[in-house]
Length: 159
Image 1 (cartoon, helix red, strand yellow):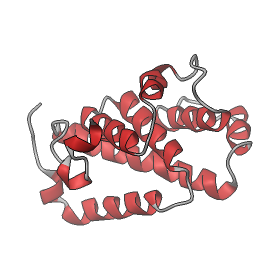
Image 2: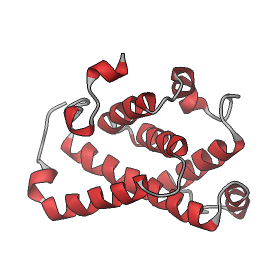
Image 3: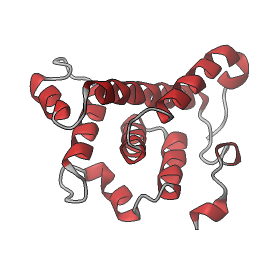
């Protein structure tokens, strides 16, 4: 992949706002394991290699099991995810690739069984934020691993 324009340099105020939103989402009450799964699944759906690479590495550093990462693309068929994680992944898919029906009442009820209103609000923002990052990085065609050191993703941590 080659870099095209550098949005980080050309729109620094907007990147800072998105970075601030990311930090606020990171600091929210949302479980970090759920957030990692959401970031990875949205990045898979959007085909964002840079973000997928980064978030898989972060999930491993946070203690995520490798087998669950392998199963994430087929989470519906895998027994490795909790009901709460399944609800978050279903909402991630519905908001990342919305159908003409949007979020159905059935899905909304399923998600509400596992998330409070505050958590659902935070989850919705987490999904929106990763989708925004995916689109920025897709346009830029940033190579995976380009900013590893900036995100504390030193190779030694991943071995």
